[in-house]
Image (cartoon, rainbow, N blue to C red; front, side, top):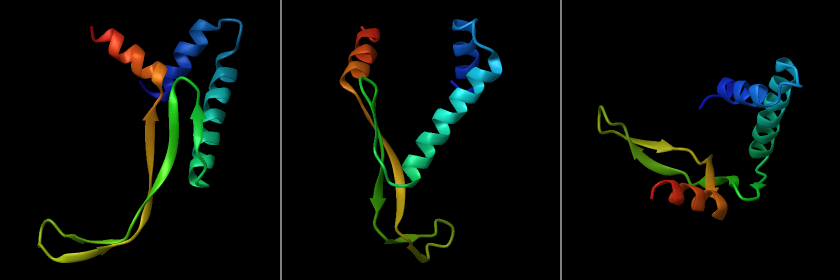
Length: 95
């Protein structure tokens, strides 16, 4: 599913709203999520899951082409932990 398909789905389920308004809301939600993650904040969506960041330590890696050792800097990576309700829905659909 892409951002545009989310907008299309929400717009079709809410015909009383203008498409451009639905688009603005979806983009605002994604912008707010991105902004908070970049600030290191945790985002908890009850029943869906938790979005956050984890810090990866600096390490020595390898260049796959040359085999040469390379210093890899520390960095923040995003993570998602699935909520209980979402996990139940996914497991129920697999049966």
